[in-house]
Image 1 (cartoon, one colour):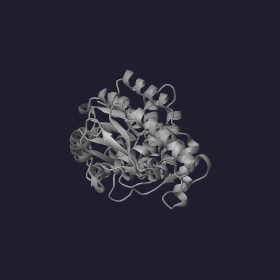
Image 2 (cartoon, one colour):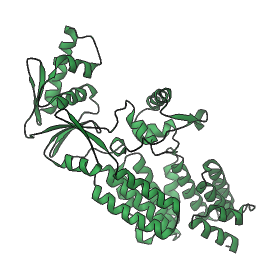
Image 3 (tube, helix red, strand yellow):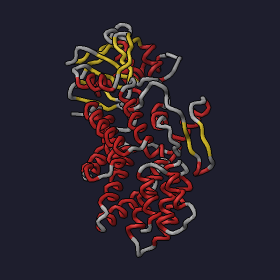
Image 4 (cartoon, helix red, strand yellow):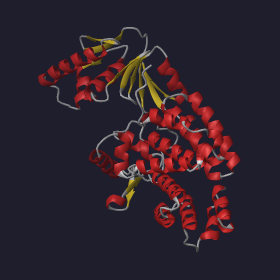
Length: 406
């Protein structure tokens, strides 16, 4: 490798993209194309970066498998940055295997980190954690080590393990400071801001207050009966009943939780569960049916008793009933939660991350666009959607994550 390529690579490692381009901007050999692609990615021109990296992979050819594999890893990172979650994961896996076989442990570890980061984005936390466990962070350069710890912090936050998240962020901050890359340090600070911002609202006995992530963790570890509107789960200590696929039942549970220790009127329950202003005998009959189904779902946690006015919740073990709600009520909160990272997402990537159909996501995006909450650019498959984060709020509890049942 010649001196210009070596100098450009060192500039990129230090975050000096322009310095790297000055050395290789006019060269079209394979190593120069790869470095130019990485530099363009750091500067934010992801489309140009992808093109250069693919040219570099072709230029390396089959006789230089390590060079080609490194280009694939770099392209995978560009795909993640552009939220192209449909990028072929098998290609990254093959590249990682090649790097492992050829002794390039650092770039193989970086490939594993990218796999973990993608799994985190789509809410597959167990797999992301297993992938991270395969990496020895001490063997990584400082910049990659900071990224590794940011993924670890993200997993801990999704699992509501705030102490572990803060410890990972402290390690990420040390690594970012050692790397000397301002953008990386800013990313660490941004994630720390999530931990220090309100994560949910607590509704209890007619009062409302904001909770930090630590307070949410404490609440879910307590003996309280919690109607969790962030995860669409009803739980008390040790038991959780998911109602994400039963929206009518969850709406009834939330209305009863908000009314506790009193009762909720039949009229309010019909309005909350069925969205109907008409309250004839057919609605009352349907309400009785749905209340019966809710009783069956919650039988181990609470009774649902009829009163003269309506129905009331009676927990079997807990002495307190609370409702945990998102910091901001929004019909399409999960879509906004993903867009709040400030990146440009395609509707297909959002559908993949949320585990829903692309058409459902498209309807949500058009509704949000009509309300002025998101905007798009590009056409067809190149269309991307963006928004700015809601000031002062974190969206951790709205993002995809497994049900927490101990």
